[in-house]
Amino acid sequence: MSSASTSCLATHELGIRVPGRKLVADLDIEFRKGELVAVLGRNGAGKTLTMLTLAGLRAADAGYVSLGDAPIASIHRTEVAKRLALLTQDVEDIFPGTVLETALIGRHPHIARWQWETATDRELAAIALARMDIVELAERDILTLSGGERRRLAVAQILAQAPDVYLLDEPTNHLDPQHQLDVLNGFRDLADGGATVIASLHDVNLASRYADRCLLLFGDGRWELGDADDILDERSLAALYGTPIESVNWRDRRLFVAAGKS
Image (tube, rainbow, N blue to C red):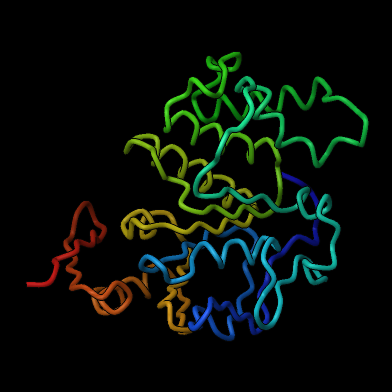
């Protein structure tokens, strides 16, 4: 993790719209170092657009996002990439390359122009591959990977980037149950070590298990933010997803189940 002390992401009266619809209104949040925040909402509620706006890849429709003490739009993108990484929902591979070469892309913000990767860069990329249990695939062509293997490589790439802030849009896409847990355990460890992790999730139970706070997006401008243990309950989740939600006790924690409409 970078030692930069100014990397703290915040929103200031942030607004996000699509034609004819307000998704998020007046969003004011400071994302803290050392925490994992889960972003929850039904399909079309604006989770992906929110992540893109937080990353500075989409202009806010109102308000602004700050990284450290400056608006993110005013910071050079190379500097942003040293301090913030975005994992998108899906990755399209147009050109062939090896798994290691792809992981090394995460090191590019830290490499001066016209310079090659150093032994340290290659070591960090290999460590990231090992954390995702794909180091043995280092010389494989990425076009031969399964969907789950490619997803873990995408995670390894941003781990190699070593920012202070991780934005994860559906990080568990394409992953089997054990690898879902492995990925989220890894980001929980990074948060515990001082990083800021913001992850949009569809699985409420994963959010309940790993998140410190949850941001609920209702898709009509409304939002709620709170500690995961407080904000995740049958009432709030039923309102969020538009379907009855029931909770059951399991191993000293709550599990949420969509009961469905009769």
